[in-house]
Figure 1 (cartoon, rainbow, N blue to C red):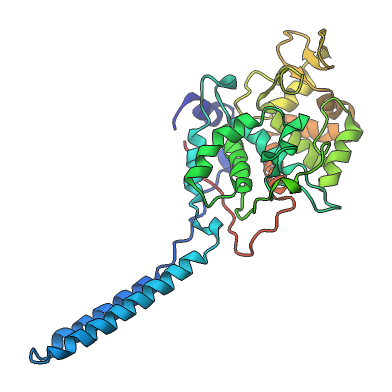
Figure 2 (tube, rainbow, N blue to C red):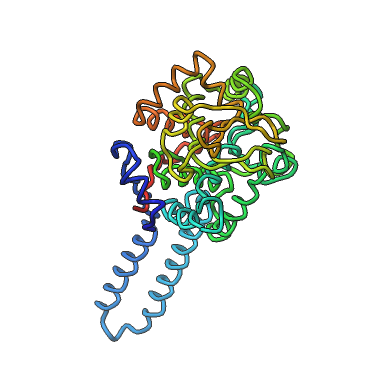
Length: 361
């Protein structure tokens, strides 16, 4: 898809394409059994043609042997295919492309589903607790009530509905793999860094839903932010890198209660969250809604109380200043932290490959 949304990030706002890597080739399906059977059949046919014409009585026996061999080969090959894990039957580069084709929609927020796909992947993964080893993207429990109805997940039904036709098209992909891959697509297709991704998540039922309160409360400060992310196993630098995703998207009063975008390009992945946070003047918004901040010059952009904590907390601010002046470093750190987030609590198959997907430009 060649459109302004995908071209502008890479031609105008993105750092050098140091983060862009070629996608790994998908392993070819095994056809050794079929080739072995074909060679055996060819050999038998040659021997048959070499027999004297007077020995017609033996033809039926040879054909019977061939038929039995073919049947046995077919059975072996079919059985081998049936035993192949479902996740190995999916062409993930094709899934990536199909997700990317779903991004643009002029009737949705700022014309792109990319930001809400990133949010879906993050909320599906950010419930992990390293002490209890529960939560995370492995079960995709975000699609079940009561987790789907938690306040922090308001509005994510939009993203799940958008992706559901692809789950029906690629029936062997798990919801956990689909939701996290959608987050990777959102980051990369909106101009962000390449994010490594692995398949092999297994879905779970509603009884595995995590309790409410595991995701950050945007109205809180630095201590709360650390409690949430330390529980998952992140350090301050990783936390500061992940919050940079607030360059994408906007808040809605009918979802979170907050309102507005963080910057002027909510469908382009940049380091603008950091530059706006540090360089703009932020004042409390005068309204009947929850406490939030708006830029003093225009009032068009907003920051959450939790966002402001990254400016006022000395340890967080060190990284905010770093990312504001160096987008390449931000991209590298975000890529690593986001890939880690998507894998929290997942027990991958030993032979699960790592993908670096091609973008559609």
